[in-house]
Image 1: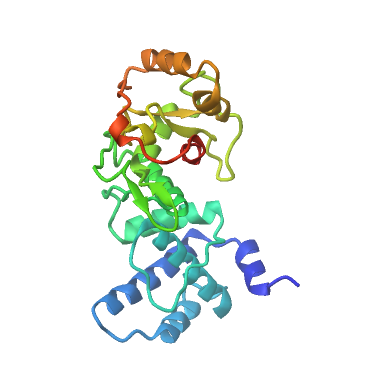
Image 2: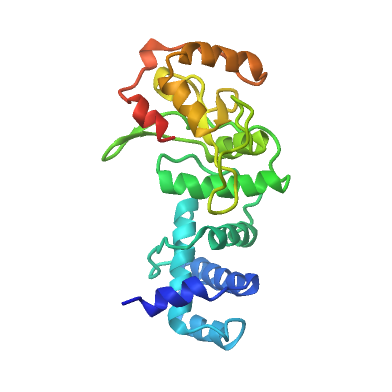
Length: 264
Protein backbone atom coordinates (compact mmCIF):
# COMPACT_ATOMS: atom_id res chain seq x y z
CA UNK A 1 0.00 0.00 0.00
CA UNK A 2 1.27 3.47 -0.84
CA UNK A 3 2.29 5.68 2.01
CA UNK A 4 -0.25 8.57 1.95
CA UNK A 5 2.36 10.91 3.42
CA UNK A 6 4.77 10.23 0.57
CA UNK A 7 1.99 10.41 -2.00
CA UNK A 8 0.83 13.82 -0.82
CA UNK A 9 4.34 15.25 -0.77
CA UNK A 10 5.13 13.96 -4.24
CA UNK A 11 1.91 14.86 -6.01
CA UNK A 12 0.73 18.10 -4.42
CA UNK A 13 2.55 20.93 -6.18
CA UNK A 14 4.25 23.00 -3.53
CA UNK A 15 4.47 26.68 -4.38
CA UNK A 16 7.67 28.69 -4.01
CA UNK A 17 5.99 30.64 -1.20
CA UNK A 18 5.16 27.45 0.69
CA UNK A 19 8.70 26.11 0.31
CA UNK A 20 10.13 29.44 1.47
CA UNK A 21 7.85 29.40 4.52
CA UNK A 22 9.12 25.95 5.47
CA UNK A 23 12.77 26.91 4.97
CA UNK A 24 12.30 30.15 6.94
CA UNK A 25 10.66 28.25 9.82
CA UNK A 26 13.47 25.68 9.76
CA UNK A 27 16.12 28.42 9.81
CA UNK A 28 14.46 30.24 12.72
CA UNK A 29 14.45 27.07 14.79
CA UNK A 30 17.96 26.05 13.76
CA UNK A 31 19.36 29.45 14.77
CA UNK A 32 17.53 29.35 18.09
CA UNK A 33 18.82 25.84 18.79
CA UNK A 34 22.38 26.89 17.93
CA UNK A 35 22.09 29.65 20.55
CA UNK A 36 21.05 27.11 23.16
CA UNK A 37 17.42 28.20 23.25
CA UNK A 38 14.52 25.80 23.70
CA UNK A 39 12.73 25.15 20.41
CA UNK A 40 9.03 24.31 20.33
CA UNK A 41 8.67 22.56 16.97
CA UNK A 42 4.96 21.85 17.45
CA UNK A 43 4.15 25.50 18.05
CA UNK A 44 6.20 26.54 15.02
CA UNK A 45 4.43 23.97 12.87
CA UNK A 46 0.98 25.09 14.05
CA UNK A 47 1.92 28.70 13.33
CA UNK A 48 2.94 27.81 9.77
CA UNK A 49 -0.17 25.66 9.16
CA UNK A 50 -2.39 28.49 10.36
CA UNK A 51 -0.70 30.90 7.98
CA UNK A 52 1.25 30.39 4.74
CA UNK A 53 0.84 26.59 4.83
CA UNK A 54 -2.90 26.52 5.50
CA UNK A 55 -3.44 24.12 2.57
CA UNK A 56 -0.95 21.60 3.99
CA UNK A 57 -1.33 18.88 6.58
CA UNK A 58 0.88 18.36 9.62
CA UNK A 59 2.40 15.16 8.15
CA UNK A 60 3.27 16.88 4.85
CA UNK A 61 4.90 19.75 6.78
CA UNK A 62 6.98 17.28 8.82
CA UNK A 63 8.01 15.41 5.69
CA UNK A 64 9.05 18.62 3.95
CA UNK A 65 11.15 19.68 6.93
CA UNK A 66 12.98 16.37 6.71
CA UNK A 67 13.50 17.03 2.99
CA UNK A 68 15.08 20.36 3.94
CA UNK A 69 17.39 18.49 6.31
CA UNK A 70 18.45 16.26 3.42
CA UNK A 71 19.38 19.24 1.23
CA UNK A 72 21.18 20.98 4.09
CA UNK A 73 23.08 17.78 4.81
CA UNK A 74 24.15 17.62 1.18
CA UNK A 75 25.38 21.22 1.37
CA UNK A 76 27.29 20.45 4.57
CA UNK A 77 25.22 22.82 6.73
CA UNK A 78 24.08 22.26 10.34
CA UNK A 79 20.77 20.44 10.79
CA UNK A 80 17.94 21.07 13.21
CA UNK A 81 17.64 18.17 15.65
CA UNK A 82 14.56 16.02 15.30
CA UNK A 83 14.31 16.21 11.52
CA UNK A 84 16.27 13.31 10.09
CA UNK A 85 17.16 13.76 6.40
CA UNK A 86 14.69 12.18 3.95
CA UNK A 87 16.25 12.25 0.53
CA UNK A 88 13.40 11.47 -1.89
CA UNK A 89 13.01 15.17 -2.63
CA UNK A 90 12.90 15.19 -6.42
CA UNK A 91 15.14 17.30 -8.68
CA UNK A 92 12.73 20.21 -9.21
CA UNK A 93 12.03 20.71 -5.51
CA UNK A 94 15.70 20.18 -4.66
CA UNK A 95 16.67 22.99 -7.02
CA UNK A 96 14.10 25.33 -5.47
CA UNK A 97 15.13 24.43 -1.92
CA UNK A 98 18.80 25.05 -2.73
CA UNK A 99 18.03 28.51 -4.10
CA UNK A 100 15.88 29.41 -1.08
CA UNK A 101 18.44 28.04 1.40
CA UNK A 102 21.27 29.97 -0.25
CA UNK A 103 19.18 33.14 0.00
CA UNK A 104 17.95 32.73 3.58
CA UNK A 105 21.32 31.48 4.85
CA UNK A 106 23.06 34.38 3.05
CA UNK A 107 25.47 32.05 1.24
CA UNK A 108 25.03 33.08 -2.39
CA UNK A 109 28.60 34.40 -2.46
CA UNK A 110 29.98 31.28 -0.79
CA UNK A 111 31.83 28.60 -2.75
CA UNK A 112 30.63 25.06 -2.07
CA UNK A 113 32.96 22.93 0.03
CA UNK A 114 34.74 19.96 -1.58
CA UNK A 115 33.51 16.49 -0.60
CA UNK A 116 34.20 12.84 -1.33
CA UNK A 117 30.57 11.80 -0.85
CA UNK A 118 28.81 11.31 -4.22
CA UNK A 119 25.33 12.35 -2.99
CA UNK A 120 26.62 15.49 -1.30
CA UNK A 121 28.73 16.29 -4.35
CA UNK A 122 25.65 16.18 -6.60
CA UNK A 123 23.77 18.63 -4.34
CA UNK A 124 26.75 21.00 -4.15
CA UNK A 125 27.32 20.91 -7.91
CA UNK A 126 23.68 21.90 -8.42
CA UNK A 127 24.08 24.78 -5.96
CA UNK A 128 27.34 25.96 -7.51
CA UNK A 129 25.88 25.76 -11.02
CA UNK A 130 22.95 27.96 -9.92
CA UNK A 131 25.36 30.61 -8.66
CA UNK A 132 27.39 30.52 -11.87
CA UNK A 133 24.31 30.77 -14.09
CA UNK A 134 23.15 33.81 -12.11
CA UNK A 135 26.55 35.46 -12.53
CA UNK A 136 27.28 35.41 -8.81
CA UNK A 137 30.47 33.38 -9.23
CA UNK A 138 32.15 33.94 -12.57
CA UNK A 139 35.84 33.17 -12.08
CA UNK A 140 37.30 29.65 -12.30
CA UNK A 141 37.30 28.13 -8.81
CA UNK A 142 40.29 26.63 -7.02
CA UNK A 143 40.47 24.69 -3.78
CA UNK A 144 43.53 23.12 -2.23
CA UNK A 145 41.57 20.25 -0.66
CA UNK A 146 40.05 18.89 -3.85
CA UNK A 147 41.81 16.03 -5.59
CA UNK A 148 43.18 14.45 -2.41
CA UNK A 149 42.21 10.96 -1.36
CA UNK A 150 40.40 10.26 1.88
CA UNK A 151 39.86 6.90 3.55
CA UNK A 152 36.62 5.76 5.14
CA UNK A 153 34.88 2.45 4.56
CA UNK A 154 36.29 2.90 1.05
CA UNK A 155 38.78 5.23 -0.57
CA UNK A 156 37.50 8.20 -2.58
CA UNK A 157 38.90 11.43 -3.92
CA UNK A 158 37.70 14.73 -2.54
CA UNK A 159 36.04 16.66 -5.39
CA UNK A 160 35.33 20.36 -5.77
CA UNK A 161 31.68 20.92 -6.79
CA UNK A 162 32.53 24.44 -7.97
CA UNK A 163 35.00 23.05 -10.53
CA UNK A 164 32.42 20.56 -11.83
CA UNK A 165 29.74 23.26 -12.07
CA UNK A 166 32.07 25.71 -13.85
CA UNK A 167 33.19 23.17 -16.44
CA UNK A 168 29.62 22.02 -17.14
CA UNK A 169 28.46 25.62 -17.47
CA UNK A 170 31.24 26.52 -19.92
CA UNK A 171 30.51 23.44 -22.04
CA UNK A 172 27.02 24.79 -22.80
CA UNK A 173 25.58 21.31 -23.26
CA UNK A 174 28.17 20.10 -25.81
CA UNK A 175 30.89 17.50 -25.41
CA UNK A 176 34.22 19.34 -25.30
CA UNK A 177 35.99 16.38 -26.93
CA UNK A 178 33.80 15.63 -29.96
CA UNK A 179 31.69 18.84 -30.04
CA UNK A 180 28.38 16.98 -30.21
CA UNK A 181 25.33 17.86 -28.08
CA UNK A 182 24.80 15.98 -24.82
CA UNK A 183 23.08 12.68 -25.67
CA UNK A 184 20.06 13.33 -23.42
CA UNK A 185 18.74 15.57 -20.67
CA UNK A 186 18.86 14.76 -16.98
CA UNK A 187 15.65 14.55 -14.99
CA UNK A 188 16.14 18.20 -13.98
CA UNK A 189 16.43 19.29 -17.63
CA UNK A 190 20.21 19.78 -17.61
CA UNK A 191 22.25 18.30 -20.50
CA UNK A 192 23.91 15.06 -19.44
CA UNK A 193 27.69 15.38 -19.63
CA UNK A 194 30.38 13.78 -17.47
CA UNK A 195 33.38 15.63 -16.05
CA UNK A 196 36.69 13.96 -16.93
CA UNK A 197 40.16 14.63 -15.52
CA UNK A 198 42.56 14.81 -18.48
CA UNK A 199 45.35 13.71 -16.16
CA UNK A 200 43.54 11.35 -13.77
CA UNK A 201 43.57 12.13 -10.07
CA UNK A 202 45.11 8.72 -9.48
CA UNK A 203 48.10 9.79 -11.61
CA UNK A 204 48.61 13.02 -9.70
CA UNK A 205 46.42 15.29 -11.81
CA UNK A 206 44.76 18.19 -9.96
CA UNK A 207 41.03 18.70 -9.49
CA UNK A 208 41.08 22.04 -11.32
CA UNK A 209 39.45 23.64 -14.36
CA UNK A 210 42.69 23.38 -16.37
CA UNK A 211 42.62 19.60 -15.96
CA UNK A 212 38.91 18.88 -16.39
CA UNK A 213 36.53 18.79 -19.34
CA UNK A 214 32.84 18.04 -19.83
CA UNK A 215 32.37 15.08 -22.16
CA UNK A 216 29.70 12.73 -23.44
CA UNK A 217 29.68 9.17 -22.03
CA UNK A 218 31.16 7.77 -25.25
CA UNK A 219 34.17 10.09 -25.20
CA UNK A 220 34.59 9.53 -21.47
CA UNK A 221 34.94 5.79 -22.05
CA UNK A 222 37.28 6.44 -24.97
CA UNK A 223 39.58 8.47 -22.70
CA UNK A 224 39.78 5.56 -20.30
CA UNK A 225 39.51 2.47 -22.49
CA UNK A 226 40.05 3.43 -26.15
CA UNK A 227 42.92 1.88 -28.07
CA UNK A 228 43.77 5.43 -29.18
CA UNK A 229 43.28 7.03 -25.75
CA UNK A 230 46.80 8.53 -25.61
CA UNK A 231 46.40 10.14 -29.04
CA UNK A 232 42.86 11.24 -28.17
CA UNK A 233 44.13 12.88 -24.99
CA UNK A 234 46.87 14.76 -26.84
CA UNK A 235 44.42 16.00 -29.48
CA UNK A 236 42.08 17.26 -26.75
CA UNK A 237 44.89 19.10 -24.99
CA UNK A 238 45.75 20.87 -28.24
CA UNK A 239 42.14 21.75 -28.99
CA UNK A 240 41.14 23.28 -25.62
CA UNK A 241 43.30 26.25 -24.69
CA UNK A 242 42.55 26.27 -20.94
CA UNK A 243 43.97 22.77 -20.43
CA UNK A 244 47.43 22.11 -19.04
CA UNK A 245 49.32 18.93 -19.88
CA UNK A 246 50.06 17.83 -16.35
CA UNK A 247 52.72 15.11 -16.14
CA UNK A 248 52.04 11.73 -14.61
CA UNK A 249 53.48 11.77 -11.11
CA UNK A 250 54.67 8.28 -10.29
CA UNK A 251 55.03 9.10 -6.61
CA UNK A 252 51.41 10.27 -6.50
CA UNK A 253 49.81 7.24 -8.14
CA UNK A 254 47.11 5.97 -5.83
CA UNK A 255 45.56 2.54 -5.55
CA UNK A 256 42.39 3.37 -7.47
CA UNK A 257 41.40 1.69 -10.71
CA UNK A 258 40.06 3.33 -13.86
CA UNK A 259 36.64 2.11 -12.76
CA UNK A 260 36.89 4.22 -9.60
CA UNK A 261 37.92 7.24 -11.68
CA UNK A 262 35.01 6.61 -14.06
CA UNK A 263 32.55 7.09 -11.20
CA UNK A 264 33.53 10.75 -11.08
